[in-house]
Structure formats: C-alpha cells, structure tokens
Length: 403
Image (tube, rainbow, N blue to C red):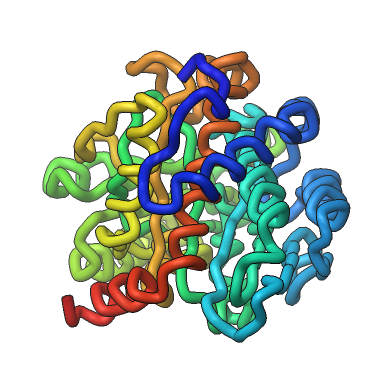
C-alpha cells in the first residue's frame, strides 16, 4: 500500500463513511506515527509500560475519550470510552492496543505499531462519533509478551459488555485469519546448599545441577512432542561464583500447544520433570505457573469483513501458516467475546519475529504505512458493526455456535 489512504475507494457497504474514516487517519498521520516512533524509541517490558501507557492515554483523551488510567488493577492499563451521538447502549466495540517490549531486545514484536494503530482507529471513529450509536471502547492492554495482562483486565471486568474486539498485529506476511498456541509462563527455582567447590564439594547440594538436569529432561521430552507443542526456556540465575556450589538456580520457561487438552497434559508433565531434577540432586524446587494464554476462537464472520475492507487497499491475504504460530492473550479475550487478531506485513517474508531485524523493521516507512492502513481498516470494520445491527447479531451467532 503506497497510495494515500484517501486515494482508494473503500469496500462497500458504507463506503462514504469509510472514506471519511480514512481521511481522519490521514489527517492525523503525524500524530499517529510520532506515537509509534516514540514508543519504539523508549521500549518498556511487561507491566512496566508507564511512559507508553501515559502517551496512549493522553492521545485518546485529546480526541474526546473519557479516560481511566490506570484501569483496573494494572498501573499500565488504559480504558477510554466515547459515547456515540445517536445514543443507546449497543453496540459497544472494543479497539485494543498493545505497547510492551521484549526485555533486552525492545520492540522486536512491533507493539509500537499496535499501540499507534489502535490509537489511530480510535481517533478515526471519534471523528464520526456524533453519528454512531452505542460506545467506542479503547483498551490499552499491558504485558502481552509475559504475564497475560489481558487476563487481569478480563478478571477486572474491563471486557464486560463488549460486542466485538479488534486488534491488528504486525508480521512478515499478511493473514487475516488467526490461530494461536495456548501458552503458559513457568518460573522454576531450585534451592540447594552452598559449599566450597574445591575443598568441600561433598558438603554442597548443587541447585544449578538440578536446572541443567531439567534442561536435559526437556530436550529428551521434545523427541516425543507432537508438532503442535513447544517448550523452551532460559537460565535467569545460575550461581554467583565458579568456586561456590550454587544454592539457588532459576529458570524461566514456556509451554505451548494448539491443542488445549494436550496443553493441560504438558502442564503436569513439566511439573514432574522439575520435581525429578530436584530428587536427583537432593535439592528442593518451586514451580510457579503464570500468564496463561488460550487458543484462538477466531470469529470468521468478523474476519470476513476485515478481509474485504483490507482488500480494497490492495493488500493480499494469505492462509494461516501453521508452521509459524505464536501465542497471545488475545486468545483469552476470544473465549469471552467475538474477536479478531489479523496480521499485516511490515517487512518482507522471512524476517523472524522477536529479532533485531523485526525490531528495526517496526520503525521503517513500510511499517508506518502499515500502521496507518491497520488503523483505517480496524476503524472501518468497527464502523460496520456500529452501522449494521444484523452484523453484530451474526457475529454473536457464530460465537455461540448457532451459525
């Protein structure tokens, strides 16, 4: 997409209103892209996105939203609400934004573009708010990379009463349909006993040995894992000096699967592996599971409308590549409200996510154009829900399994 958004006739229905949404995004191009680049230049990890959350909250407040910041229990969560001028309680459409970065890498998943495109979509919809029914609900959602911040927001009731939720994701290929691996974060801490590694090694109990054994067990376990399952981890802490037997070792892991039933089995198997490593080394172990993310209940009815709106701008959709699936707490949201999580390319295919190359791609002119395009198409798809009660009903029928 290289032409200005306003040079393209949007898809029907409601093409005239959709053109005005595109014009609103173009009119605020500088504000939207400046936000993307500012967040990219100041990366903040999960639950610590204080600057990004503030900037996002300030941006939507300038455009008429009533803003809660913090929203719920999370200091970096944001909710903005703007009533439509036509009144009524329905529909309530959620426009989401993410803005957390990866520790040590920065925005290697491109969440700066997700924050800016969400704000851009909210700005565009605000420009047409006087003619909309219901309510535009903007949710700034922290901690997608670790900790599943959206689940906290679900538990805090921030997704209650929404009729649909939309969030774009940057990628190396465009695919509107979304599949996700269920995932869970696991922190493992082994406790042993310090001793001099040369003069009295027999007096120690080596916590690092236990962690090494756990990694070895996981490596062997992988041989029997199906293609839809993943397990991976890093060492967080492995001792303080080579001549001191470590009395504490800490690892951080993730388990994943597209099969929810298999995923539950992995949960228990991992715990037994950790306990086995502790038994073999005469150490003790603490295993803490957190940040669970579900598989994706992708709403095809809503995705079809997004796909049609995207196609008007010449962006070709591709089928889901099941060899390259990740995880997201958008899966948790999708189990409770009709949800889509489409991806649009910001770089050439083959650039891996969570890499320096993808981080750098997230601040390029191509990423900027994708951010504006995503803002436009999210806003246009949301507009269809506001303008067509039958579409809202169809989305919910599919969600309830009635379609």
